Amino acid sequence: QVQLVESGGGLVQAGGSLRLSCAASGSIFSIDRMGWYRQAPGKQRELVATITFGFGGSTYYADSVKGRFTISRVDTVTVSLQMNSLKPEDTADYYCSVEQYGAEYWGKGTLVTVSS
Image (cartoon, rainbow, N blue to C red; front, side, top):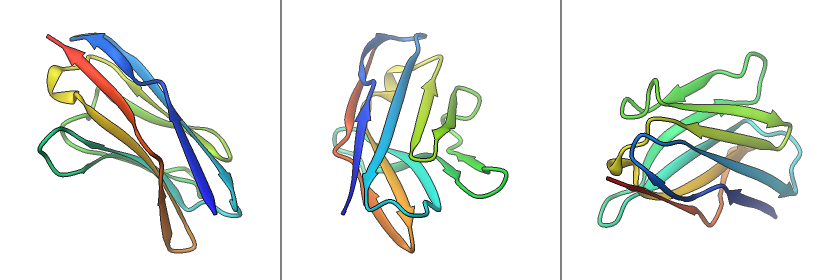
């Protein structure tokens, strides 16, 4: 079993910043990639950012967050998502995911609310 625990969500005004963190535990042997998704009310879940755990640690960002969000590896089982210049449209539940040996695992999510 793999467990993911997200933290750092909350309420912030437009233009502000938040930092999300995600820690994996349990049967963790060799993480391929970790990432963040989000789901706003009434919308489908969308990919926000990912980072690979191999050499170099390549990253991917959705166009909507490029230049504002930064995903980073904190250690071998933890990633963070620094979110700057937040907009009301960034309001959503943010979910962490981890990929290992072809399987993907999800956290329970953390709510980010951006007020205008």
